[in-house]
Image (cartoon, rainbow, N blue to C red; front, side, top):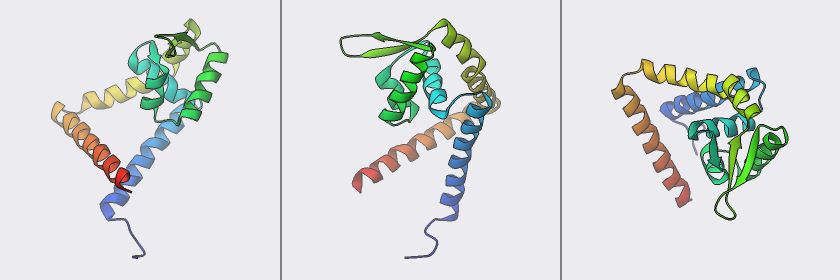
Length: 146
């Protein structure tokens, strides 16, 4: 096995992905949120003011246990309210307190992201999304083969 298994491109890609994760972490700290609370609130805001728990778990990138812990904490803090939908399914809704918190935290992050995307041409945005989606799909396929 070679000493250095990463190509230069993969090293650069991993540095960028890690850097993006670090910026989200810095944003959460700056806004007084845990990473998991920010991910949950971000997901709810991205979907509207209400979001099924199963969707929060899938879209946030958090493990089921971490997402559940963050959801329970946000509920106990009065930020979200859980409501039953279709039997066993539950949805997280922002409370008035949650809307204020979201507006002062994750909405600022989303606005920053929107400013960046708006500064790119439509072609740049489409290419970035297309290639990132392709990488995700192919990487998922490769991992399933392991």
